[in-house]
Amino acid sequence: QLQAFGGGLVQAGDSLRLSCAASRRTFSNYRMGWFRQAPGKEREFVIAISSNGHSTYYADSVKGRFTLSRDNAKNTVWLQMNSLRPEDTAIYYCAAKSSGYGPPLRVAGDYDYWGQGTQVTVSS
Image (spheres, one colour):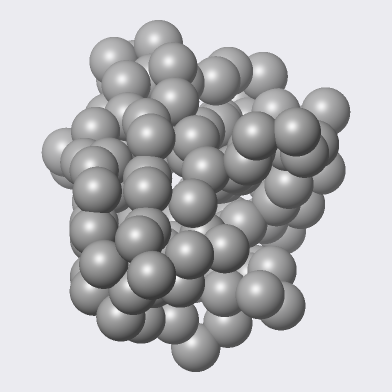
C-alpha cells in the first residue's frame, strides 16, 4: 500500500516536496515512480528511481527542476519540486514496481501498486 503526502497550493517559482510511504517491508526491492494527471489530460510520467536509488529517469519537462530520492530504511521516497510552473498543476501519483531488478520505469502500465494521489496546484 502506498500513501502520498505533501500536495498543496503554491505560487509559480515556489518549491514543494511530496512524499510517498510504503507499508511493505520489501520496499528496498521496489522501483518507484511518480506520474501526474492534469484535468482533461492523460496521466503522464514525471520521474522514476531504481530500487537502490542509483538511477533516476526524468520527463523532459521536469529535468533540472525535480529530483527524486529514497530512503529504504524509512520505506519512503521524496519528490522535490523546485521552480514550479502553472503547467505542473495536476494530481500526482506515486507508483511501485515490486520487481527490483532493472532500470527505473517510465510506463504507467509497468507498475503494480499506486497511491491515492495528491493535488498540486501552482498559481501564476
